[in-house]
Amino acid sequence: MKLPAWLGENRRATLTALAIAFLASAPAATQERRPPWSVAVTSTASDDGALSMVRDTMRRLEAAGELRLVSRFADGRLPDRVHEYFEQSHRGVPVYGGGLSLQREGEATVSIFGAVHRDIDVDPVPRLSAAEAAARATDLAGVGPAGAEPPALTVLPTPRGGYALAWRLVMRDMNAWFIDAGTGEPVGRHDLVNRQQQEIAVGSGVGAFGERRKVSVTKVSRGLTGEAFETRDQLRGAEIVTLDMGGDGAKLERLMAPEVTWGPGDIGFDSDNDWDPPAVVDVHAHMGFIYDYLRQKQDWRGLDGNDGRIVVATNLPGLKNAFWASPPFGFEGTGALVFGGLDFFDAAPGGADSFGVLDIVGHEAMHGVTYFSVHRRTGSRFADAHTYVLGPTRISVGGREFRCADVWPFPEGPTGPFLCEKNRFLLFLDESGAINEAMSDIVGTAVEFAYQPPGEGPLRADYVIGEDVSPARLIDDPGAAELGEGVAYPDAMAGVFRFPVALIGEELIRYTGLVFRGGKVIGFFEEGDYSGEHWNSTPLSHSFFLAVEGGRHRSSGTTVTGAGGANRDRVARIYFRAMTELMPARGTFDLMAAAVRQSAVDLYGAESAEYAAVHRALTAVGLPSR
Image (cartoon, rainbow, N blue to C red; front, side, top):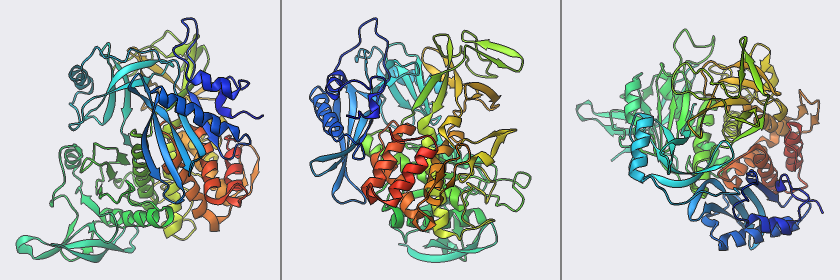
């Protein structure tokens, strides 16, 4: 009998023993902590007994109060499918990122994905009150809480494999802070920003490349000036509002606060319905394209799946970035899409001076979809999955040698020793962050092909991210894009970058900026505290390219037969459904690969060309079926 891969280190155990082990209490004092079980059992597995056994085990965990059903949604595309999410708890306290996503067809279980944490031995009674935690977080963040949401008690998995009872607070610095409920020390900090009587009317304006675009706007009355027009698109199921920041960064910062909302003076405005500036024209038009793509190709309504209003900000030439900020931030507390720009000296020759180009707008919008789709099922954002491997015992950087007991010299802010185990550096990989970025690149690319003709140059569809501003990632050939001299993006999991971290306090980690590949230090990222989520996104996004177009994989030499450009939308639907319907709160590359394969089976069948294409593509990038 072939056992499922999620048995982890004990693959020879029987499923019956596994069911008993799931219910085990805290380990003996001499027993080492074990990593969480990464659960991925699907209808594609050769052993049909695995699904029923794990489902039986889940029922035992439910009876013991360790799993709780928190959501049930009908599948957005398959009318006979239902998705349920079971949150893990420890003695009544939710475990952050712990839980299982189950897909059913009638009473039959089709797939289960997620993580179940083991050996939790924390006291669930906090010694620190919620008010005390809020005061401590305010000291650390330098600003107060964001909004009226009270602190939430949770069991937080820590970087060293342990657990802490912690208060989670969302602060105005756009971070979620986790404060130890016993000591008051910070044990986690998660960034909530992904850095990148009216009459409906249709106007037009000139975009960044001189092309004239239609824009869906709203006719309004503005006092003595008579009729005018605002960038409010009410033709679509979700109203799209584009705010014109007029180059005012302070205005953006004010409007991002949870308790502040936009007003008539913030919205794009034009008196004759012949629109400018190009940044406003492009972003407003492109958000309409994105809505149409999600609705028509993915059966998804808006960003939140329920046609909630979409508010976007642009015309910020001093903000050299584009980003999505998760709730409670945003212009109505429902998240924010913001598109900056470049000045004359930074703009690429022949490129746009705004980040409101089509694939970047699609990229950032997908960050919103990822947030809302996972949150509505699990009650959590797509949780940080920082996994690690053991590295060397010493590191040499710039002629200086570091050992585990040494402190990394951050140029500013708090510092601490390297995080090590068994006298070896721990090298971290932000898997959920990389998956999030890959999915956004996949959807940004698919949107380009839906609305632009294939080819090279401005306003053409290709597999290069952000090429109309300044090329970033090449998902058709990641190895052809250099991050630095002789260092390219990875096209397979064997080439991902890992990072040593410094330990600030007892559990809080900070990325040092040191970059490892293949167990060796290869460079230093000067900005520091970067977890490499963009760099490490390319193996997964490259698998999408291979699944569509096929070809010879650069580093492995493996040849993949793709489904073909005519089936690009079908392949994109597979990846999109894997994220929005199947993924649990805590995502790893192995779980994502299993969910993509299951999604292909659900949509097109195990014998389909689409399943064969994604299976071969995932295998080529180092994500074989387990």
